Length: 464
Ligand code: ARG
Image 1 (cartoon, rainbow, N blue to C red):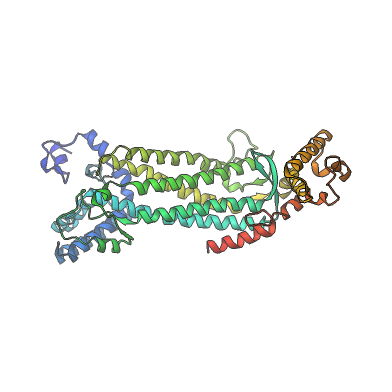
Image 2 (cartoon, rainbow, N blue to C red; image 1 turned 45 degrees about the vertical axis):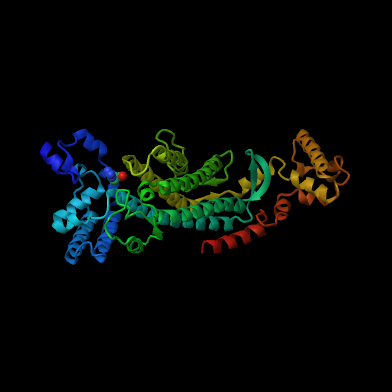
């Protein structure tokens, strides 16, 4: 393309005496990635055109030509026939140029009373709203899979850890419900973020609004926005909604990552608590025996890039003066990748979960190591009238004794236990069992199997 052609290519080139250099053009072009917004750009343009007509800004035949032309553009995009060109900078110019090619003069009227600044903000919001809805669907599916697994394991005992040292017995169902709670908060956060995403910037034009008698509420209604951005300067310069989404995504990924870390650990034969189905694992090119939990590792690893995107967006915004600056073009790749990473991770995790095989015996025998019911014995003594600090001390001594004998606290005889507190009776043996410990925690949020089943029933209603 000659320099002369290159300069004529740009809708803004009227005041320029020379074209952008090739490198500048490549450097500033965003169409390679923002073409992802194409469908939303067409949708928003059609709503804008209908409003322009309804308010008498463009004529009936103009609207008809624009609508028809946009329909054709949409068809070409969907069929992969649309010719994207970096010479036309971004998704907006590419679409407008093709529309004008198809519709002629009326196509040139579409950009009345709008700017790419409010246009791009509108497109991104439409895109993100759809992405949030998709992510919410995946979270719900994952929550269902969690509840199914938790139901199966409402009575399965496993060691509960603090400091990754055996703490107290819990049911595996209870452990899984902890992740249900995290995901419930993730869903709440996304739904709340959606409210702030779902506002219409269009009408702000470049930053100061427009002298045309536009009807912003009409456009908002047509595009399903809950309201309009109230200030034109804020409308074009705000990217809080994208940052907020990335914050929500970072938290959700962190939750998945923690779960993955546990699955990876539990698949190690030293734990042997679970096996992941073969279809979610891969082998080694050199070690024939290997079966690696790569899906879980990748989700854990991808958490890093989502955190990075959050920081990238915060940094893109931190020193921008009002209103729109081209810096904002840098919001897209981090945002798109965050959406992709979150949705894929949620989806693959949701698929992987039902394929988890649990070794109940391995969990139970691990739960017996490390005197997990010591706290239960201390609480037993408190019920017999011993002050908690004294009960704690007495049981600690008993643990030391058991250690010196190379056995567990629960393996000691009543007569041995009585050396550490005269308040200990025969009934102490029952509280020292795993089952006794679990059964006693029936309060709201407790790990007793009956409570876990009740919590599952409540959770099912919550996501119904
Ligand atoms: N590609 C641009 C972006 O993503 C569109 C808006 C361009 N506006 C402008 N004044 N140059 O932000």
